[in-house]
Image (cartoon, rainbow over all chains, first blue to last red; front, side, top):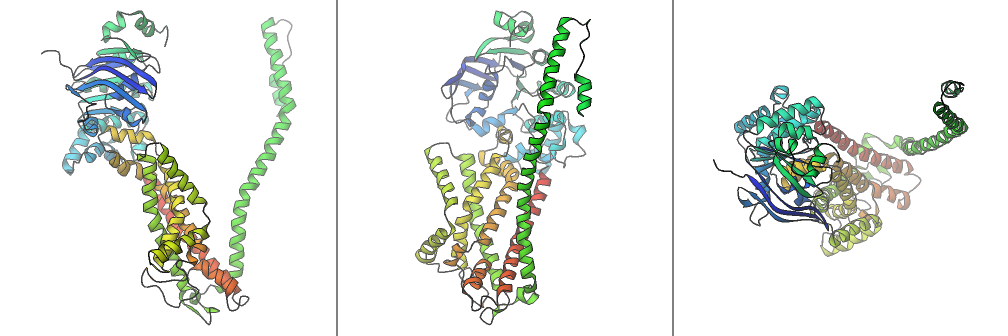
Length: 253
Length: 321
């Protein structure tokens, strides 16, 4: 098998108004791998992540140039339907954000908005994605209760199930465990391990240990620039650059 | 309490303690001294202010209670089944106020039927779709100015535009449209507040799942905002039910024994009826109890409509939890 690339940023620049937040970042993500984006607060890693499914389009004064190729097609092309793109590139947010609906309706939401009407299929998919997100056993008897009654960790796994239900190809995670306790965090990390068999996962994290535990590749960002990227094992043990070493050893950040 | 504090903090300095510890104890004592100095004064200030706030809050309740008490005391004798179910007779000195009740009900419902869809749609546009800019600023300025226009001006506008220019004549329709225009800023304002209160993370989550903007608004944002929108509807209905000036020229008549059969009919209305009886009736003194009775019915009607909306809202809120 030759080296395939699922999604790739090429010379990406991003601006909030006049302030440039991302400087000429080029980065490839391979399928069925977990890539961690690390770096100090404000380094642009979350902004970069949100470029990958054009979530930044929601910010009125923002501007992008450069390309992001998903299966070799530039997602910033005029012809690309952003709604379709976001179905293919799912997202899990920093704070668990289930809708104020039932657990079932949360998991079914993506299917419903994408026009799936078949009741049996929806039920099947809901169960499947809840199982994939390792929360089925905890909620199977209370699917018709409000999702807001779940604990934070359960809510976050429900959000992951919700994202998986529409069968995305890439899953973006923006510090998915930062609002959770260690046990819930471990569940999410275990989940990421399992999910990478079928999905391309890109995760922003503040925790170096987490990056080391869950990712195959790690990219280090600093003030809007991609400083170093490599296999996680190598990057954490033998970083090529001094800046990277300083950050991962905790000398700054 | 003060004794207790002294025991804890006002420590003696033992000779043997090192200098650093002595320093700390000295600082503690200074803080303790100044604490004691301001302690009584702080508590007094707090006590006085809270009392003032409490009285201010109580004035609201007392105000309402006084009004209701006054109305009930003077009007309850007028409330009979006949009063509620008959048309006025003997030059409106006897009989009931059924046409006024029907009139006010249809005007309020008509007004909210006009202003709720337009108001909610405007608020959705302003809050969810419109990009910030000159146009948005002008629209907002227009809305806040609309809220400040005196109600009699709405009446004259309704007369000129709906009644005469659009040839609706004095009718429930013209009155509802006029009252609708009057309540529009209330609906827009509270709907916008309700939309703003919906966390952005809901919108992001929905869009992130491949929903369109409209699907996001329809399926997530609006359901979450509905209780707040209902609050606006409550305020709007109350406002519409009580207004007199806007319906004087557009819908309400001095007297009609007929109940309306279509939206093109003229009607009587409770607030206008009170005004008529109190200022231009055939025998103002004789009809005093009827005036209070009518006012009482108006208050009960508004309260009743509000109660329905409040119960509905509470049930919605429960479902969202």
